[in-house]
Image (cartoon, rainbow, N blue to C red; front, side, top):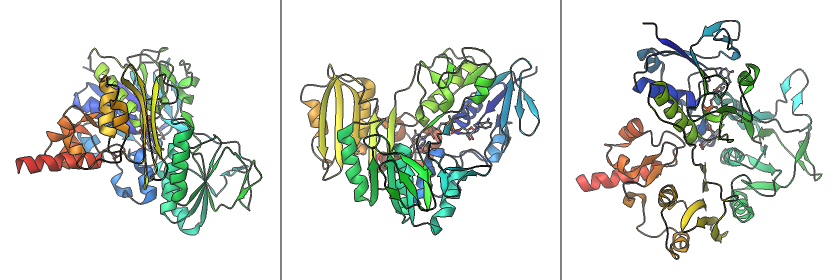
Length: 464
Ligand SMILES: Cc1cc2nc3c(=O)[nH]c(=O)nc-3n(C[C@H](O)[C@H](O)[C@H](O)COP(=O)(O)OP(=O)(O)OC[C@H]3O[C@@H](n4cnc5c(N)ncnc54)[C@H](O)[C@@H]3O)c2cc1C
C-alpha cells in the first residue's frame, strides 16, 4: 500500500522533534524535511553559548545523516520552500522543483524584526557590513568571524536574546552597549523593580545599558540614539524581537493572525491536511517563541498523526536567561497575572524574587540571581500546590540555604523545563548520556545540567 507523503517545511527544533517522535512511533509516512539553512538541524538555543565560548560549535547538531538515512527520512538542506499549492498538493522549492504531499507540516519558526534605523540596509547590498542578526548558525559564525577585528559593539534590544548576545560579546572581550526602547530590561517578562536589579547586574559585568531610547541612525561614526548620544560601534547586533514566519501560509490562503492559526490537533483551521508547530503556530490567540512549547506541540502532532486521540491544551511558559554571570527564570506572566505579590530584591547580590499568589497558589514567579529554588518553585507552580500563609515568604527569603540542593528534589519535581522531565525520571537513568538520550533533559537550553548531575551523583552515592 502507498504510504502517505508527509512533508515538513523548516528543519529547526520543532521539525526535528516531530520527526524523532514519528520515527519512535513507527509512523507509516514517507517523510521529507525541507530546510533552507546550509547544514543539518542544530540546537538553536545554544547559539548564544557558542558565542560566549561555553559550548563547542561542533556539538550543536541534533541528529546525524546516518540517523535520518537509517529511518528512511529524506532531508533537503539549502532548499527554500517558496510556495504551497493546496489544489495540487505540492510545495514549490527554490530553484524550481516541487514536492508532492498528502500532509504538510509548517515548522518555519520566526524571522527577526528589522528595527527602523536609517542606514541599517545599504540599497542594493542588503544589511550594512557592521550589522548582524542573531538567529541562525550562519549568523553566529559571521558574528564570531567579525569579533577579532572589533572593539566596540552595540546590541539593539534588551530582551532575553539581546542580553545573551551582549553577554557573549562581553565575554569575548568587547566593550558592549545595550540599547532598549522600553523603560527597563526584559520588559516583556518582568517589571521595573526586577529590571533595575538586572540592569545593575548587567552593568557590573561591564555592559552599559541605555533604556528608554531608540537607535535612529547608523553612520560611519557609530549608532545615533534619539536622545542625541552617539555610540561608537564596530558591530551592531539586532535583537529587537521577531515575528512568526507565516508568508507561505498566508500566500496559500490559510488563516493567519500573528501565527498560523491551529486547533487543538495542531491542524490549520482552514485546511485539515496542513499543520503548524513551533514559533510559527498560533493556538488560542497565542504564539510562543520558546523551545518547550515547540517540543510539546511536536509530540502532540506526532501522536495525532499516528492515530492517538490526544489534544494540545497550550503550554505554560518558563523563560530562562542563561548567560555567564546572569541567571533569570520567569514562570508564567508575572506582570499581567492577578494575585498577591510577595517580592524580595537584593540589588547588592543581584538577586530578585517575586511570587504572584492567588488563593495560596503560585500563579507566576520571577527568580533572578540565585536559581537554586527554580526546581521547587516550578513544581509548586505546575502542581498548583496550595501554600500556607507563611510559605511564599519563606520560599523567597534567604540566599541559597546550606544543604539545599537539587539532589534532594522529590521524584515528581520538574528538573528540565525544556523537555518537561522530573527528578524521578533522571534518578532512573544510568548516567548523563542515558538521561539525555532517554529523557531529552540537558539537550535544550542546558540549564538543568547541574541539577541532573547532582541527582545522578546522589544516585551513584546511594547505590555505590
Ligand atoms: C540565539 C537564540 C537563543 C534562544 N534561546 C532560547 C532559550 O534559551 N530557551 C528557549 O526556550 N528558546 C530559545 N530560543 C527560541 C527557540 O530557539 C525557538 O523557540 C525554537 O527554535 C522554535 O523552533 P522552530 O522549529 O519553531 O523554529 P526554528 O528552530 O527557528 O526552525 C525553523 C527553521 O525553518 C527554516 N525555514 C523557515 N522558512 C523556511 C522555508 N520557506 N523553507 C525552508 N526552510 C524554512 C528556518 O531557516 C529554520 O531553520 C532562542 C532562539 C535564538 C535565535
